[in-house]
Image (cartoon, rainbow, N blue to C red; front, top):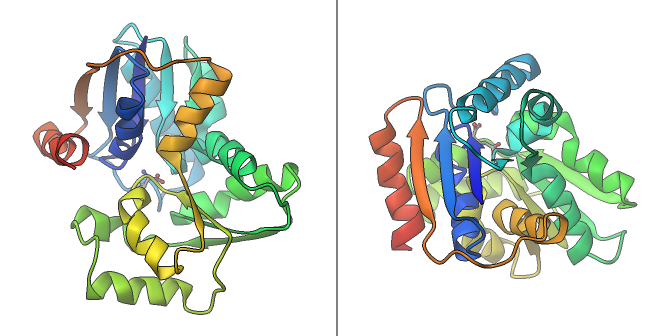
Length: 248
Ligand code: DGL
């Protein structure tokens, strides 16, 4: 099994990390559109165009499946990508919705969705969860968390102030959907902020669950070969990959 993983930049490495932990693929081709990141502040048509271009990129490789690790692209461009691809294309939003439904049994649980402005504006998570009967949903764009992660500010004053800025008037949710590739790197601080009373839904784990349930993939490949491509500065992406995937 050879998979293409697409993200707007480095964030999708959090999804690759989950794929590696579960040893599902023989080879992973990662493509981050680092020249044009962030996607989260762009409009629908642009996101769709970039998504289709990513499908074209993957046509250079003989891959079995494309995983859209980027929440923003999954929210806007999945259908168009499916239509232009010659292999299946799956995205983290549907996987995240299903993972939430599997983990949260009470449909009136308070669920908070955070993500980029585009992802939240799309209402993709909200609509998916509403269709499954969830009634207490809140969604909040938290775009400042993206550059903080890129600066490796996983703790500290700036992050504390940012969390307060976004969440100070909110009650502790039962579940928090980390609707952006970068946010799993803030899992522990978010857990603490919500006093360890909130279940976090992580796109990487959600996609693994989805692959196991829908594609019947099993743990098999101990040494996955990962190839990294970026539309700008691939060396920087490889450096981040080394840190995020292999050193933590
Ligand atoms: N990868 C994006 C996402 O998951 C975050 C970064 C961006 O705005 O492009 O939504």
